[in-house]
Image 1 (tube, rainbow, N blue to C red):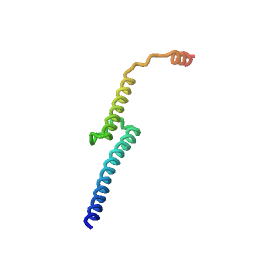
Image 2 (image 1 turned 45 degrees about the horizontal axis):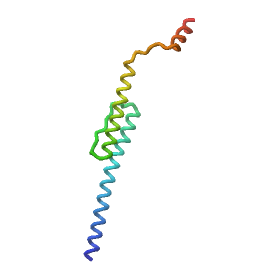
Image 3 (image 1 turned 90 degrees about the vertical axis):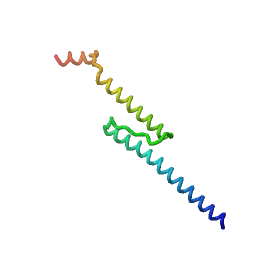
Image 4 (image 1 turned 180 degrees about the horizontal axis):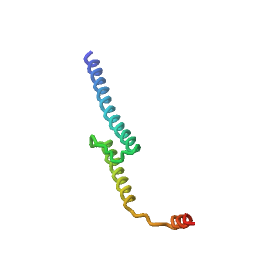
Length: 97
């Protein structure tokens, strides 16, 4: 009888622990999904705050780093003066005709 009670208590503890871990992982993945959706809709300054130092936290940091590099690239593209190319010069010449 005592062994049965201990086994049932152990099984319940394992199920509760698994549910806790599962919810935590799903919450982090849903946060990434939400961020990807918001960024895709144009919120390019959106950032995700890592909630732990685990693997999901590493993915969040990598995601934020990717966004930082994208912002930098976009800023550089906006700052670069556009030099006329042969095609744009030909187009301008044809428009004057």
